[in-house]
Image 1 (cartoon, rainbow, N blue to C red):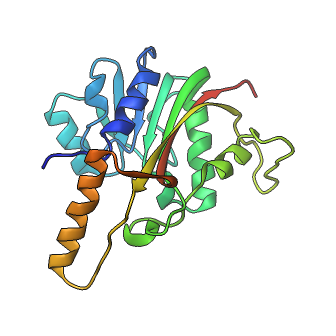
Image 2: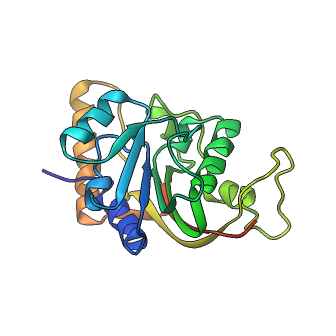
Length: 215
């Protein structure tokens, strides 16, 4: 049963970046997003194997750290896509990443940011360090009235345009009792997603569209 949990996120991001002329995909992985815009996208990834895989597919990709986009010029892009990355960062690293995104993005440019939210099974992914709920990002960007983040200077200014959330299955099945039940419950959760049987009050992840503002 084929089902890609990120396809809806990619389509949402694609719709909001389609008018951009030069797009950067940060932590591009194997190029599943940049191949949607192969002639106007560039991917960066810290893993050389991912970059080589992208290049074999004819995609533009470079080895680069999201915390230091040294291969990218200031204001080089009018669109940035960053999917499922910031949750592996400490708060200081996450802020550094957002500052680098702001640096390479033109004023008025679009940032599409996807990350896991604060939910019960967040730490089942071994690489995850901490969740960043949307409200935390909005406070960093100064998009919450009266909210400030005095710990970090020079924070970028972004305006929230639109949000899409990934809901949890109506009944979330989980077990570590045996490999059989793990596989069974994984399939049951997958079937619920395919059928649209989702809990409207519980969110696994969100995709937020921002527009860069003048500092």
